[in-house]
Image (cartoon, rainbow, N blue to C red; front, side, top):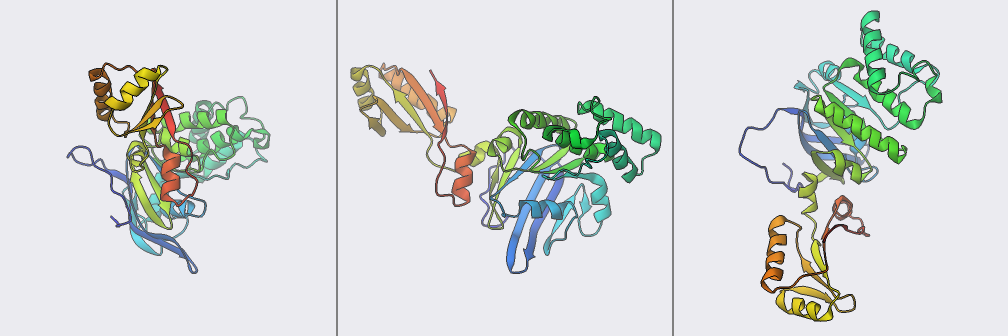
Length: 333
């Protein structure tokens, strides 16, 4: 693992699940610009992996390499158990790719798009029609199937795009910013589709510009910056990398506030708001310590708010952003 990667702890000593995608030392340059500087990846089968990074960080380049659209300048990779360089044809047979720009042909109907994809996968006409009908039903496109795809909404086109990707029954799907340009409802519908795919055992490699999307969907997340993996882990593990978590206690009675300020250690006072701030990573253990302090002093706060860094904070901290967004919070009364 490169020294630039912040390793996350592994839970348990059991055998690791098989990797759907693995890469060691992937490098890619365009002229003098180094886009990928020796990245390592390991994505277990049947999981969602999200690759985050600023525009131009190399996310799409990584997808193009792993899906055999372009070749790496260095490093090794296996996708679906097949070596990327030695057997790219087998890799292509195991994967599906949906980019941020739809591959749907707007001049023909949704059904015709599906049948065209079935032909490309060399399915018989009978099998192609069966698969197309099943997928159109699964993605709620039966009513629109006979209409030109140009009449579809953005969300419908994206659903059709993924349905077309599934014609070949891939076990690994690369989704390159799949919800770009979609309205919130369509985005949430797409999240549901991704969850269904994973429940069927499909592995999803997701690039996205929406941090809440990665937080919502991904089993593991990597942050790509300056051609390197800056950090990798679960969403919770990444959030713990960033300092700034705290508990805020608010009081309505000035006397209770003063007593709490004396009883609790290492607090930041806000006398105007009658509030105390205590450093805390948001873990159950640390919260229990704070609550035990309050119980021992027979003090009850009117409001307890846990502030924890979110993926926005992680992203800005790891990619050199100057303005860290507001921290997320959950209020416990």
